[in-house]
Length: 299
Image (tube, rainbow, N blue to C red):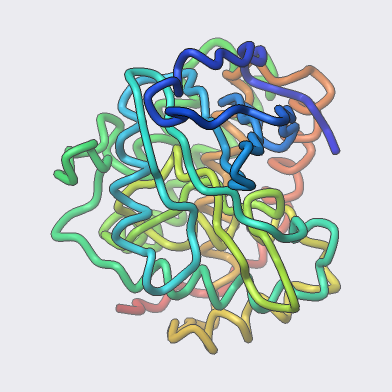
């Protein structure tokens, strides 16, 4: 499992959970390597209980607990049992990461569709109190344009690719406008390390740091990117089994939205090797986009 991270691991501090522990003792502490930003420790207590202490690298982490409360009936999620200014304590869920059992990709896609059944009044960022604030960048198209204007992105992809992506965005404006209007619950990091499988079923959806109100095609694009093409057909069937109505161009929509991730990665602290792979994905998208189907509205 890659440990190419956005932030350094934070040390375990027992004093953070003193109130929760009471008379219980921490029997074991295990650093969980999955995840790129926050630090997670699996804790086993003297009463046999198992928990995950999540140490956050950014503010406004309360959105995680709010989103998980909204979706706890459609999909299994950890339960927050305590929190502090910069951390939360969640129940530990048993299971294998989807990346290790990709044959269950269809079940993950079905869970993704159920997550997207939660609808908000408008797209935007989910605040800790459950309110929605507008995206500062204005949506998918706005984020792409804003990213292309940064020196870091142009340094990685070059001026010719910047112009090519701008041309693609212009051609795809009708699709992007429809995607920008989406206001469904989006996990925001729906990759194969954040989906737990047990007994062939989804046992948990983890890491809701990037959750927001928007288009579910962000989650679909993330899942496609992290899944071998041999399993892509299972994604489509799983989404439909979960209640999602898919247009013919659903994979094209997902790829367009996933472009935002590639561009964002180029401005992050991820490794140069990882960023070179992002550039390769952008090239691949530009090639395939020449043969995208004609846009037809799907609401």
